[in-house]
Structure formats: C-alpha cells, structure tokens
Image (tube, rainbow, N blue to C red; front, top):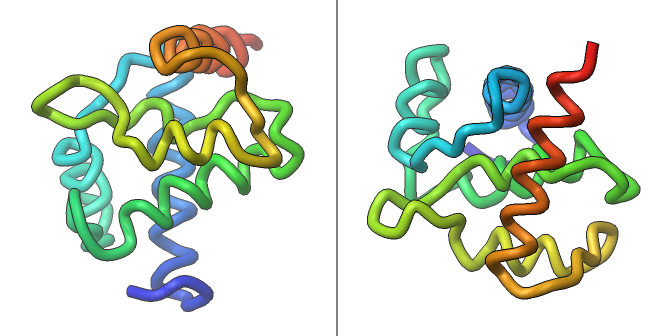
Length: 122
C-alpha cells in the first residue's frame, strides 16, 4: 500500500474514523497491534510496525489538523512494550505545523487531554 493510492486513502479514512471514535470515547490509547487489527477488521491490511503504518498515523494527524491547532490523533497509538507512542510521534509533534513544546511526558499527556476534551464536546 502506497501513499496517494485509492487503497491508502481508504485505509486513511478508516483510520481517521477509528481514531476519532477512540478520542470521543475518552482518548484511551491503544497499541499498534490493536489499531492494526481494527483496520484489518474493516478490510485494510496495515501491519502494526512496518509498511504504511507510520505514514497513516502522520497523515491522520495532518489531515485532521492541517494548521496544527487541533490535538494529534496519532497520540492515541502506543507501543505495547512501553505503553508510549513511538519516537515518530514526538518528532511529528515537534515539527511544523504542530510545534508542540515540552518534554515527552508533558507533551503526550497534554495531547491526550486535548483529544478527550475536543472530541467529547457536543
């Protein structure tokens, strides 16, 4: 699956719906494996740790907030071993358009809190 293909765009749309629903339900993180399984159950083969997964997560955050003003949906997906996002999340968070300040702990906690607040609003 490659970016800018119909297959990728369909997987990205499904990822966005899945992450929005997760954010609206309290913004509890899920593992890469669980997220991959949810996408697979909806007909999109996106392996947890290779292939298009990093791009899908980056594009989900960018599509949802092109100007960086909204919380990053990719904050919801974490590594099973650490229960923390991967380094790619923090790299994305610190570059434009997001440019999030703070150390990893406060940055991630703030994103999760913003996700829960933003998506639970009526």
